[in-house]
Length: 281
Image (cartoon, rainbow, N blue to C red; front, side):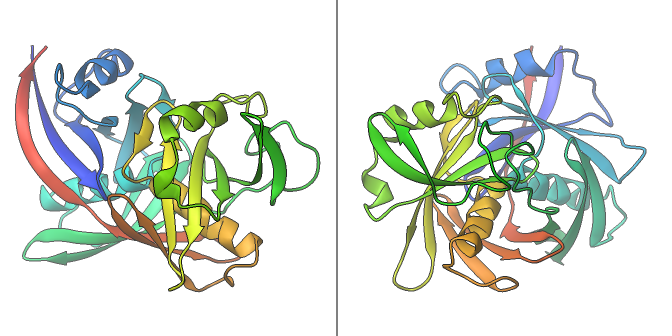
């Protein structure tokens, strides 16, 4: 069986995109494990299926490199928007909708020369209660709460953007962290029954937030859109920023702009097509 795919990335967060309007995938979890492997597969952070939807212009299903299915991917959804626009599947409209396991998301596309350049995504309302994240902790929210990991006390702020995030603001340079060692200890901490994505963040002198991320099911990635949104929300909750202002989050793969309002969280960033191909399964 031959499978056509498109490799795309948002800020270096790369996925293999499969058009399921034209093809079918029987076991996407196993396919994600196989294709995501560097050297032995295509290499990626996972696989994203672009499927028909009765509720939106398309439906997005995303699978991490370990085969687990995620509810939402902020960088991935921008790439889905670009795929739909660039391939003429939304008739040139710059206001589109995409169904996810976290609900239907609205995208405002910026285009030029017939191609989408960037997208502003309505990521939905940030969820802060421990039950929504989920996390085994009392109270109405988790803001700068102490958590001991690997015999060290960290202060965590937890946010759900349709998937769970644990944001850790640090004074030490996040570039010096041994993320391969500490990341899994956060991801699999008993506090988080569904595991957790963890963002380690520095506030820079120019007001930019520098972030490294350890994603559940994928390990360290160059970027995480929902993670950048969680950082923006956490920055407001911790008093670093005010609501309804643009916040720049610098990831290893590029920058995203986040705006946290009473009604929703907006995320703006680019999306890039790397190459198209066909693989024998």
